Length: 238
Length: 161
Image 1: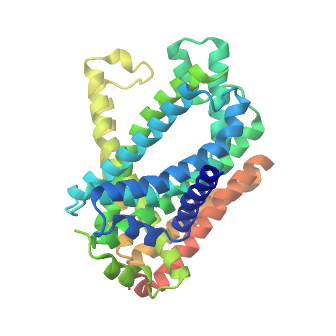
Image 2: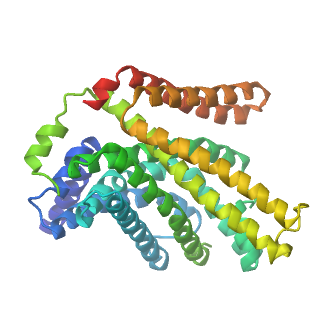
Image 3: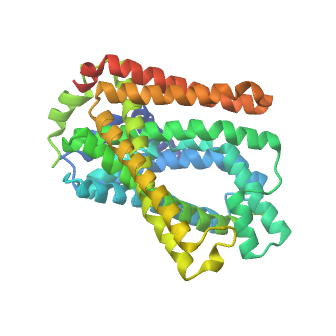
């Protein structure tokens, strides 16, 4: 009973920390990137917030996984998915760090990672909800490829064009949710840029230029990672 | 290079701005990031386009649908690249000015949003209902940014503070 209470308590703690982060992102960024913490503590604290957001996002996606025959027990799908999301997080933070350095802003990787994980990663559940239609469409497309027994080149063409037959209502939902997701993504990046400005006391236009460069490099890298993740989905989907 | 937490908290986390000013600040910054992102991709396209056109000299089979000669293709690509460079430069300048909350840049981008709003609105009635709903979302986004940037231009001194 004690261990159960402890588990509930710790879950409540991390969940409330995440909610505080959503409500006060700037304060949370400073809390986890401040000078009173060592590098390890900064990364650990930020990853805790990000991990909670990621767990909420996974819970929100569970119905879609279930719809396509992927259960919680399918570790061959979930573990690579966690790895890909972590790699994307670290790549985003690393590109931002390098771009900031390129713009002569004395970025420190643990600080930038902490700020990035909080200001961008913590809002993952909102993107998950908004990307429901595109996730469903992606899953339908991969399922159609698998059932159609297409060769690799043909499958890639279908995947890029997303031309598998789907419900037109779904296409409509994708068209509605995509611009909203884009706007929220931009707002998160603006939040990140502001938090970086405050933390490093840098000029806003230099930070914005660095963030723009980092995102310009990150987007093609994310496309490659998504393609690999789709391969994993192909194996797991029924 | 970070400064002490207490100092930062007192300086930035309890700012004199209202939530509304902070939100307009976020919208202006997101517009600046978008302009900057577009400038980087336009720069990349301006570099890639002539390189692709050059490949026609030794791999004409890659361009079966282009009726122009290799030199004409290269010329067209050079003109396109120059145009891309000019637009990229304009976006870059706009991004820098937006980053500094420059009122003229704010007004220009607000007008650009209004132009996009007008272009979307002009095609609105010709579309089927489902596309009209999607179009409505875009209209809402463009008008939202146009108004926010215009308000930002009026209160640019507050944004700088």
